[in-house]
Length: 67
Image (cartoon, rainbow, N blue to C red; front, top):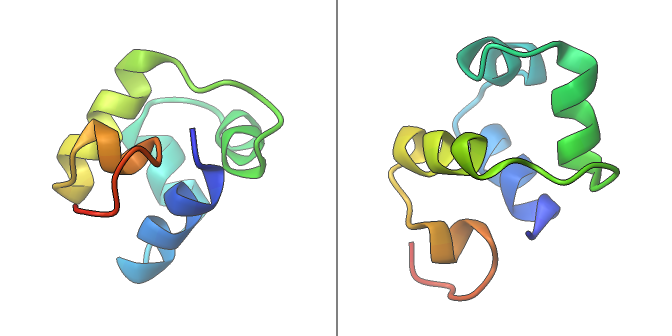
């Protein structure tokens, strides 16, 4: 997964890490590790983020540049 893309999507939507962690119902530190690439994001969380940002999973994981 392209972790930079997760951060860019969050910043483009003017959300804080805390907001996205709450959306995913997880602790802030866990989400921060996903965003830094220190921990692998589970599929359910990636799907939820793709739906939230209205992008494809392929875009989220860096397989395409088309949202």
